Image (tube, rainbow, N blue to C red; front, side, top):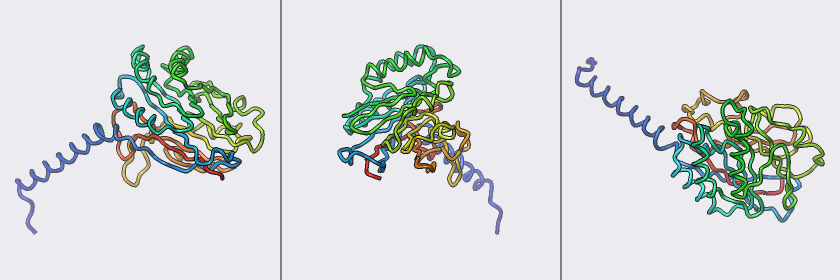
Amino acid sequence: MRAPGRREFLRNGLLAAGGLAGLAAYACEIEPHWIEFSRRSMPVAGLPPALAGARILHLSDLHVGPRVSETYQLGVLRRAAALNADFVVFTGDLVTWRGAQPLERLGRVVPHLPRGRLGTFLIPGNHDYGPGWSHPEIAREVLAFAERAGASILRNERVTVAGLTFVGMDDLWSGQLDIARALSGLPAGTPAIALCHNPDACDLPGWEPFRGWILAGHTHGGQVRPPFLPPPLLPVRNHRYAAGEVDLGAGRRLYVSRGIGHLLQVRFNVRPEVTVFTLAPA
């Protein structure tokens, strides 16, 4: 077998370089904006019969700010709103804080947030608390935009609509999470759905009274997942919580959304996501 000549070596090198350039272009320009509308069943124990077949629209990690295209965000929100879901839930990180700029953009984006026919609920994420996740005054300002747009803000509290209870947890990294307060007095067997930005909170004590689904975000699915390997970078301690459905045991199931936005404009094998759940009796 003859050794490859200089021309063949250069040709193969150029082909490899072209392939890498194409892969980089896909990961940086195409997949970060290639939204997937995932559709899943959500069996709930004790679900009121009138809610069988009702739909919950789950959005997370919009990250309004200079790093995510506003045109892309508005397009996603319009498509989501067109689904006319019964409930809409947001599991945190409306903004990526960079001075006052996110608030200017938030004022343009928030009016397009989809609203549920029966209820629209939102919880804060760590980025909604500004630099170092340590500015409650920023969170109040960010959440006020969502409230004016028709969302009910849940911070360690719960609300019941049509016989289904929504429990909203505050953010873990900001130090504002209070599981005991949110679940205090929850009757056993209550059909309930919890909203919790950071899925690591699921490993903390205090969840014992709760049976049902926990919807989370925060991870963006890792944004980059090599074939047959887990994402190399995840902002959670428990790497089981990268994305998708996880059985937590004790009657609890977790779903981690891959989110809509990003911190760096790169995704590979981890498309952004909006999830549509259809409620069903367990």
